Amino acid sequence: MVCLETDFLIGIIRKNPDAIAKLRELVENGENLTTTPINAAELFKGAYRSGKVDENLKMVKGILSRLGLLEFNLTASETYGQITVELESKGEQIGVMDALIASIALAHNEKVLTRNHKHFSRVRGLEVETW
Image 1 (cartoon, rainbow, N blue to C red):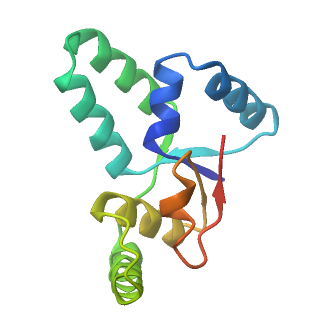
Image 2: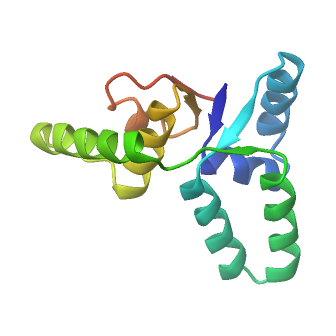
Image 3: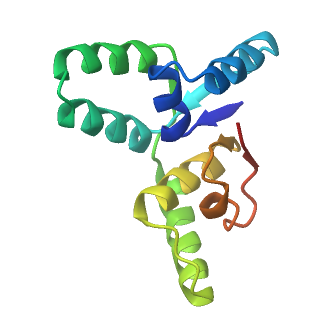
C-alpha cells in the first residue's frame, strides 16, 4: 500500500509524464493507492485558489474518488505528537501538514510517495518513495 502525497497528486492532475508513468507502474503492480484527509484538504485548497475553480474541483473529486482515504485516528494522533516532539528536539521540524501526513501513513503502515524526500525522510520509521 502506498499513500500518495499532494505533490504526486498535483502531478497527476497536471498530467506530468513522470507522475503518469509512476501511476501506471503502481497500478500494474497491483498497489493499493491511498491518501490522507490532509492531502485531500490541500488539493481542495488549491482548487478553490485557482482561476478555474469548477474545473479543478471536478478533477480533485475525480482523483480522490479512486483512492482510499486513510483515517486520522487515535494512533495517528499519538504518532503526530511523537514525531513533532522528536523532530523539534533535533531542530528538524517539517511543518504541521507534513507531520500529520507522516503520522497517518505510519499509523496505517503505509509508505509515502512524494518528491519532498527531504522532509519525509526525517521521520523515523517512515518509508518514503520518490517519483
